[in-house]
Length: 239
Image (cartoon, rainbow, N blue to C red; front, side, top):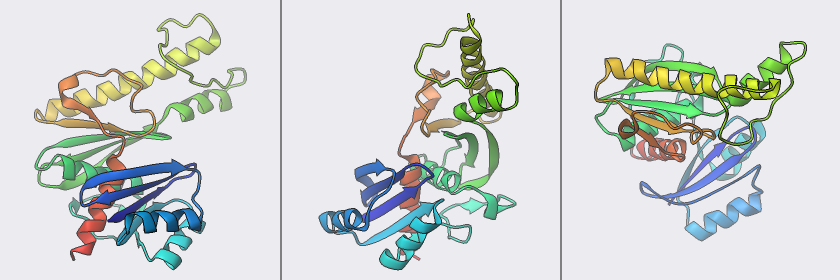
């Protein structure tokens, strides 16, 4: 059994894989050593990998559990042509590896909608060259409040959002929601104009917010990053 940990700023995701199959996943702000030990015992964990933005948690994983730590130097099961791999986000790395595993020998555009929205293309044959980074929902709302004198901080609550805002708050909601939706759809269309056989995979915390076209090419996978981390772990275990 493999244990995979995705340690973000606000949540830690802990997943258990049996080969390629995800059999258990829990997430919360943090896990105590006793909680992790219980998962080890329950699932008879043999090896693990973690991706972390928290130094304290990363140190604990390395010293007690001897997990594989995802870094710019970690061997990957694809050709990474990014010019500055040391600056490439770990979630982006795991996402593209996960996509290359699920959609083998296909061109895949991975769109991760979180704090930032990232766009990453994996070409058929497992080759990665890069993509794009854009502000996410929360960042856009904060920017309008921070860099203006009178616009309020708006919290996105639920759908639907009216196209024509009848108040300042609703106008901000409309601008941010439809602005990002049109951005995502526009990027997809640009990629489709170059890659007719393109698959599009949405992941991240906000991936369910949009109804995008063309639906027959767009897939959702909330566990894509975890699947990618597991694939990296298995690849390194076989080396």
